[in-house]
Length: 124
Image: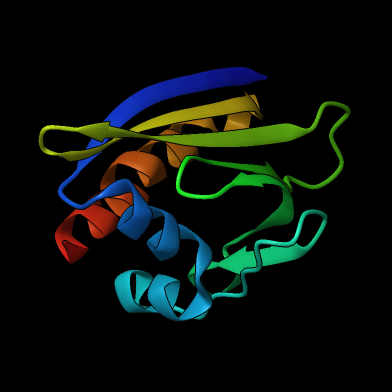
């Protein structure tokens, strides 16, 4: 199991980024794929047409999202924490993804960089 931490700059205010990450319609606009999302803790979510699935754990409006991502049967939960910080260029996004299975690490980190946050950046 490996952990990943990275910062991204998104050229939009934290409130806009939060909505883009938590509203199904907005998610579908920037991912161009079906999304199921709710800001209710313990609700299930699905992104990129079901390529990413898990459970929403915690929300702090316009500031933080915590999710559990499912990777089949693993002992330790894979936890994603996204924190949004105002910055001069819009929003500094702090990503922490804990307990990524070794065999999925390269695909997941490339996905964060070249798909998830690249698409969100390009959306703005």
